[in-house]
Length: 206
Image 1 (cartoon, rainbow, N blue to C red):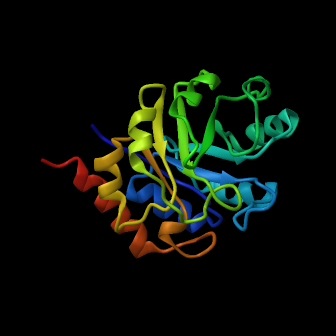
Image 2 (cartoon, helix red, strand yellow; image 1 turned 180 degrees about the vertical axis):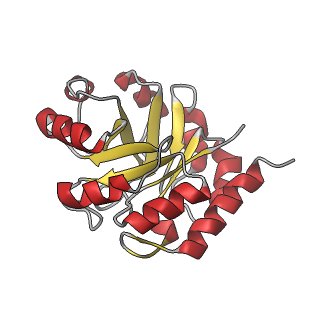
């Protein structure tokens, strides 16, 4: 099974191009206010323009106003929203574009809670300060158990050094990488980016 890759927290058009050239299936544009990778709509437009056809554009939000999502989706041609706030299933259902929930995994997380959102995809990230991009990992076995309720996007502290082990343990539908391939917040390192994709591809080879 081919594992899909989303490169998140992209803030520069050259990084969007590099991610797409490496084989990214999706690129994340961050609109979470407290994030060091947050994009203004104007900057997001510059980055989005560099994303080629057939690479999905994912808007990353926390407790967003549906009208704001609608405006950004129209301007940037977003394919989906990734939700990192405290959105209830009812609140998320008001969004005007497809969406999936990012679940913060700690010792109390119950994989069956994924089912409450009724979505075919769920992202699992390590709990910690902020709303993602912390560089922390979690028990990848939780992600494997979560696959009973949705296709799992595995996030949280993934790097070129550990993504192979993460895929073997979690068997995710996709992986989401952010800080693990950066030289600074929002600045992707070309060498780490390339090595990350090589490590993912190696998992699909006999």
